[in-house]
Image (cartoon, rainbow, N blue to C red; front, side, top):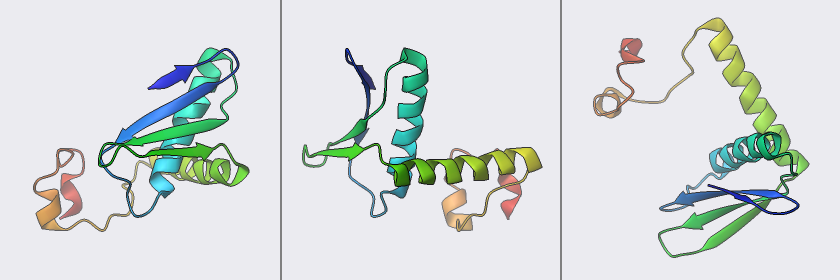
Length: 109
């Protein structure tokens, strides 16, 4: 969800619980924020995560190190797409057997 204010846009993400590593969450929110900034022509300064587990609200400021993380991830994804290769995965056969994306990467095993 994107909140559009008079002078900014704020991406909001709903999560059941916060993962141990916030890296993916931050990257996801950066992508949403940058797209919203482009779409609505207003700056993206912060993002919000609402946790369903306990109703906690976590705010992330749009910081240079978050942008660097996003850019690094974007470049890796573009390389994967450009090379038409699969990303590294630590998945096991038992995990993949129940995954909804197995039809896209069924050649792992």
